[in-house]
Image 1 (spheres, rainbow, N blue to C red):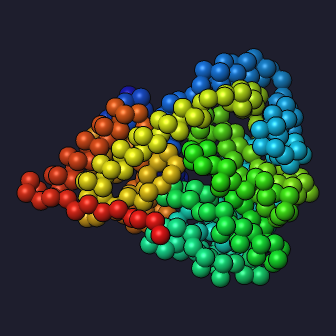
Image 2 (cartoon, rainbow, N blue to C red):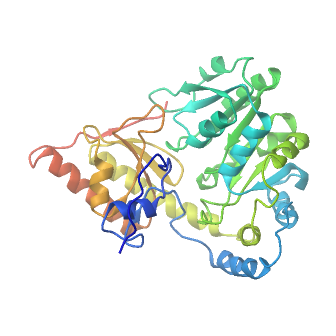
Image 3 (cartoon, one colour):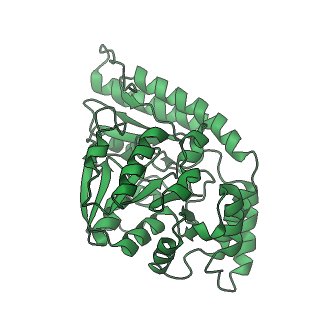
Length: 379
């Protein structure tokens, strides 16, 4: 027997709520096909699973509060000093710590963007300004006009969540130069950049020494399919700022299993390349099929796609009735009830998803109506 469904004000604002979706349907969590969480379809590497078991045995003791071994491994991977790294209980933990540490009076986020930026800023007492992205959903040079001297902090997600679109390094450097002149801190969220083949052309890790107000957020969650463990990290050359952020949270923020898993993940040599080949092929297939079905698709470069279904504001509910969970995007500022996000999953799962969308849209249009293909093109 299923537990009684909870009611009240507590509602999740993210995807991946398989438990809640199960309560709404007759499907168990295992039966649901979850396209709402952007997790690597290849799953968790075996080396990480083994490391978690090692971490469980070591959990008889407190974990290292400074994550010394993990930071040493990360330092080698990222090409920075260990002192320039702060590990946390997932990317969201570090977002909140940053907001609590800085206590900014004014902050700027893009719309749409990851909801936790605004949530954390508001909890820290900040006034949040939103920069509405243009119809292309690409960050443009007009953003520079929104970066004003009364701001304390900027959040930029690259690639963007939920669109998956990238912002080029030249524009980001212009933003960093202006922010530096105005003494504004900038947090660049690169959590999904691992899914971009040209990662080195976009990451700002090598720019840390030039911008003391720059923080780069990264995560193990998506690439290594370990969201339940919670592990992320911040990079910054401003060690005083990192220490303030560290002190804004509890001391044992990263469990022993999570630390062991992170170390094992850094030892994986070809996993990312296999992931890229897999995701790129399936993402292109999903994009092409959705366009043929009449959807507007933003050509994202991460492991998910954001798409609009004109005239169909209930696609989420209809798919859920079929045991398929996607991400509604209406709570993203700048998006509508007709906007959705779907992760890239295995070929079989992607085919099932596309077939379900086809059935829903065909039923909605009637048997004699042909879909109008549409795609957002990049400038």
